[in-house]
Amino acid sequence: MTASVDLIADLAQQLDEAETSCAAMQRVSELHPQLGVADAYAIQQALWQIKVARGHRSAGLKMGLTSRAKIQQMGVASPIYGFLADYYALDNGASIDTKKLIHPRVEAEIAFVTKTELRGPGCHIGDVLRATDYVTPAIEVIDSRYRNFSFDLVSVIADNCSSCRFTRGNIRHVVEGLDLRTLGVVLEKNGAVVALGAGAAVLGHPAASVAMLANMLSQREECIPAGSFIMTGGITEAIAVQAGDRVTARFQHLGPLSLNFG
Ligand code: OOG
Ligand code: MG
Image 1 (cartoon, rainbow, N blue to C red):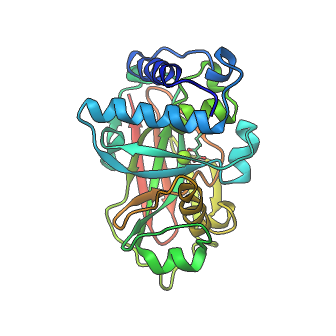
Image 2: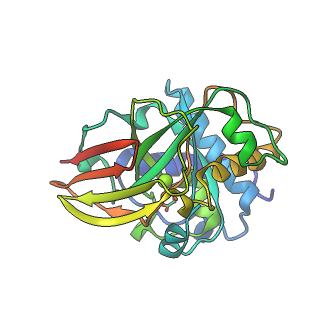
Image 3: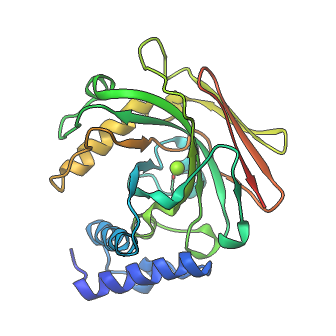
């Protein structure tokens, strides 16, 4: 780490303000080119502490940039992780006020809920499937706090991986008998198909994304606790939305989810 505690706190504050005031900011790596990945996760942690101090609680964890479609769209080729705060969570079918967001995009994701702890290093797909309580579909709404939705690895990690809102299914699907690699998803905007893919787009198998999360967390002596909700990353490229749009993600076997933007 190169950044001082004060700089980390200051950048977390700026990112939080960009979110709450809906005003895009300059990338942290432009403001401070010396920042590295460890600094970026420290800024993300400081941002989390700001939310906690405001009374928010954890709603789980997420992985990002885990599919080729996402990597190509954003130009950043390294998986990343971030936190999910309770106020991100929306009911299926909810309406989202776009005036409270900067430039939202939606993603279709497969999510896991764990029943036992997962700890790296060396965590693999088999460990994840054994530790899985159930899987459920999710739509994530991302909203980069950076101008033009443009960032590099350090900047997007600091910005908690553009996390903003999500909705998830409430039916619990056991993994036994589900092939998460061939499980298809069709993403629609205003009734038209805008993207489609299958679970294998995410690191070959969405459970590999959870394993990678456990392995990444082990680098800072942390684990995925039992009972965690984890989003594994967008299967397709993210789709920009604006007021008046309705988005539906239709997951094979897992059912549909929708969000409305007003
Ligand atoms: C970063 C967050 C990526 C995903 O599912 O890949 C992400 C971004 O693209 O803004 O959430
Ligand atoms: Mg995502």
